Each structure stands twice: as structure tokens, then as C-alpha cells.
Amino acid sequence: MPVGLTGVSLRAVQQKDGWLCCAGLVLRQPHAGVLGMLELQVLLNGDRLQHWALALLINAALIAIAQRLPLLTRSGWVHAGILGTVLLGSLDWAGWWAVVLYLGLGSLVTRLGFRRKQADGLAESRGGRRGPENVWGSAATGAALALLSLLPSAPVMLLRLGFAASFSAKLADTFGSEIGKRWGRHTVLITTLRPVPRGTEGAISVEGTAASLVGSALMALVMLQLGLLQDAAAWGLVTLVGLLATLLESLIGAGLQQRCAWLSNELVNALQTTIAAVLAMAAAEWLGLA
Figure 1 (tube, rainbow, N blue to C red):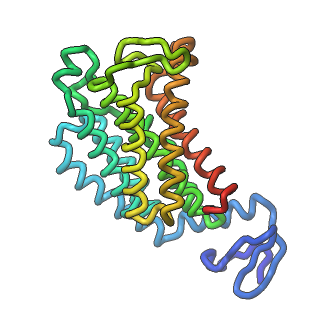
Figure 2 (figure 1 turned 135 degrees about the vertical axis):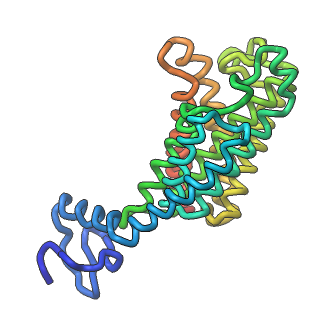
Figure 3 (figure 1 turned 180 degrees about the vertical axis):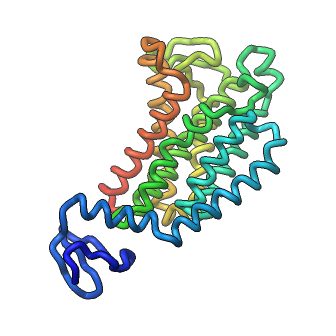
């Protein structure tokens, strides 16, 4: 067996407690740089590159058809195509459908009571259409976790759980924000509980918080049905983490965002989804769910 393991099928290589097991042989783990090259070879093998090319072609064709729908701006559709390619290439159709359904559910709740929100100056700009900044503010964390799951040594189920939590938290935020802005009766600032106008950064209401819980549970259910979550316990964990991350996002909006002009809503969204993914994965490890 050559020292560098050149020519060995890397799908047969497993890492266990600092050792490499290959074709029934146990070898001491090589230098980290060598292991990195092994994992890179897996990502760049012919089958994988063909898979990525097919994912790109499929998404290009689908975006060409779907861009007439009033969901995204023109540039937003381009970036959605890039995101779709990443997810189809890394998580196959389950990951792709997860984000398509997230986009559909988020767009649907945004349209609820839109005229009233528009009259009150609380509606999303561009008629509710999302741009590139919205695409990546919502999906950058999930896309990164999806790509990490391709590494041979990756804890795939744990990363998928983090992926599910990031999108459940984001849909919880969208549901809470859109329902709260339209139907929230008593809106208070989360840090002081003092009444504030609807749409204020960091504001919460009973109606909006309940909607956040529904949004998180719904997105977690989508993830469960797609096979990205293992069981009901994982669904429950992701649902609760999605709600918690949304409340933490309100704290960030009421505090840090007011002091930092550079902290845009999209950056706050990315921070929220990252918090959700980290919390979910840490809790799953602690509870033995992944």
C-alpha cells in the first residue's frame, strides 16, 4: 500500500479515532494536509463533477421558467439558481425542495394582508420580491452546512440537522414578522416590554410569536418529510430552536442593530440562522440525537 494512498478509492476510506481504515487495513492517520488532499479528491472526482454539472443545468432551466413568478427580482433569481445548484449538488433533491418550499411559504405569508401593510408603510419593498441580499441572508448558513456535508469525514446527520434549523428559524422570523406587522394588537419591545409601533426593530407580540412557532414547526415538518431530519425528537428540537433563535434575533434588533449602522437586516438574518444551526447541533450532540 503506497504511503500517500494514491489511487485508493476514497469512498472505502473511513476515519475512526485518529486512524484510517481502508480495505480491511488499519493505517495511522496521515498528516492533516494529506487528509485534506484525500477529501479534496473525493469532491473533485469525475462522478461528483458530473453531478455538479447536471445540477447547474437543471437549475438554469428551472430558473428560466420560474423567473416570471413575482417572488424574486431578476438578480435574485440568478442567485437563487446558484443556491439551487449548491443544494442540489450537495444534498440532492431533498435540499433543493427544502429551499423551494421555504421560498414558497415565505412568499405566501408575505402576501397576507399586503395592502394593509403597504398602507401602513410596513410592507416589504419591491412588492415583496426578494433580491440577492435576501437570498444569501437567509441561506448562506444552510448552503455552507450543505457543502460541509460532502466531506468524507463530515458528521452528515448533524450538519443536516443544523441545515434544517437554519431554515426553520428563518421561516419562523418571516412568519412572526409578517403576521405581527399585520395582526399584532399589543406590540412591545423585547428588551423593555414597553409598547412600540408595529414594525419596530426588536418588537414582539403574542400573535407574531405564535406565528413564529407555527412557521418553525412547519419548516421543521418539511425537513422531516424530506428526510433531512431523522425523527420526531429532531423535529421537536429544531422547532424549539427556530423559535428561540427568532427571539434572539429580536434582541439583536432591539439592541446591537440600533448601535451598529453597518448591521443590516440581511446580516442579522445570517446571524440568526447561524445561531439556530449552532444551537441545534450543540443540543443534538448533548441529547444524543445525532
